[in-house]
Length: 303
Image (cartoon, rainbow, N blue to C red):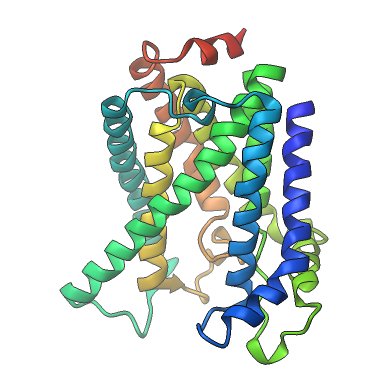
């Protein structure tokens, strides 16, 4: 568990950096840019993680492309990413369709359905999906997965990275208005985040749903030996979710509203139920497709 402990330590250090440096960064940036305080905190945390990851990679021997999940040849990597993206879009559109059929979604009153506006929403969603997938897959299913797999085996890596992946989605959800920012607001970002976990039943549906998604991505990583497929799947899911968030909202009067979480109005019991058969189908697909492309390192981790 040394590798997992090292990554937890890195996250703790990043939290400390956010608490200490977000307010000074806000003082420098806010007079010139209309950046939200929590967004600045997110960027400070990401920068701290990036710097820390370079140091952790050396400590744990993660010094090659394969350790970060990029061991496949470029052409193969891009092909598998594109296939994963298509599968991600298709599977997420399916669950959005189920939500709509059950009357769980309704159009936003300010939703703009003109072709030009929809194209902008779709383009922005794709860009965000690719960025989110790149960051999270490289860090969690790339470096962290490889380090834990080498030390403790594949299934330990699947479980631990999935738990952390789920938990990470509840970070940086505190919102502080500009007029309420104080020198202690960086600390408030962290304490507010941790306060979310003080009420586990309130987030149980979202936490389990995200954890199941993390398991699917980790299993695909293990089966293929790199993060290309997971990168594409992840980006496709986020892309569809962001577009759906822009155009629709939960139907609060629906008797089935409990199937969508209060956390974000999307992930919840319905997504959890969908993720199980979807995950089995993806496991079958990549077990048959990716068995011959797995790296020797990944195969060794299964033993």
